[in-house]
Length: 175
Image 1 (cartoon, rainbow, N blue to C red):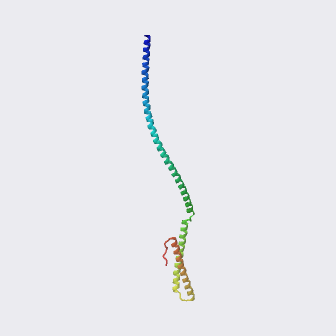
Image 2 (image 1 turned 120 degrees about the vertical axis):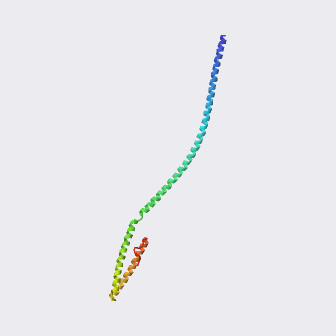
């Protein structure tokens, strides 16, 4: 019976081992189930990563297109800078318009003074001309006055022409 007790003990040990193995199998089944869930999650993560990768590819394509457009804009800006620099050089080479306007105004003021002086002289000569009798000297004076009138008309025409070219309204209407 010792053999029977020993056999019994061995059978019980084997049954305990079987029970433990069943527990280990159950744990492995739990681990397998967990691994299946982890694999499912990993598949979903991989699918999401594929989507992210596709989006990143589109972003990269857009960035490449933007880089090309930025390069093109840079070239355009460079050409515009050259044009602006050329225009700046041209503008700096123009004469000083304030100086020209001041010179024209001074010329007009001088012409006006001369015109006033000539008007006064004409008036005096007209008075003298009317009071003088006919004599050879008077005839010469009349010729001088006539010549002076012609010069006066010529100066008035020139002054009106200068004023017209400068776009200035006449200071005094011509007589």
